[in-house]
Length: 106
Image (cartoon, rainbow, N blue to C red; front, side, top):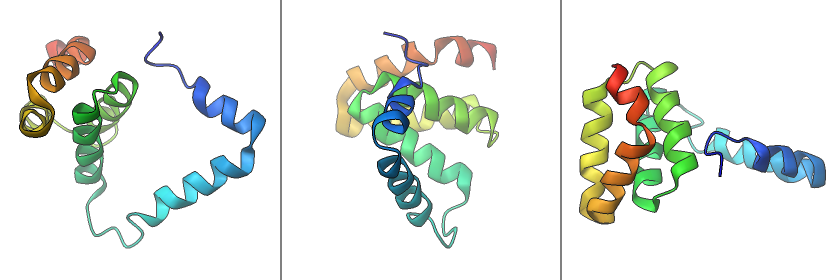
């Protein structure tokens, strides 16, 4: 499995592009008034991905938090550590493994 694959979105665009547009609109609406700064919203989504143990989402949202919004290694760690309260040690461990190359480099 390529955790960096965007095929799931390509497949949706091919089979049901209206579904993709609806999802994108829902995503925009969830923070419509920018109540949360984008960086914090991305860190929250990253934390949810950790708890769900979704490697592709951990990878995507962890990288986005770092590269687009300037999240630090310490901020990612804080979110991953907090994910243990609901997801247990496996949630933290898997997120660490998925982001290992980025965390070691920062």
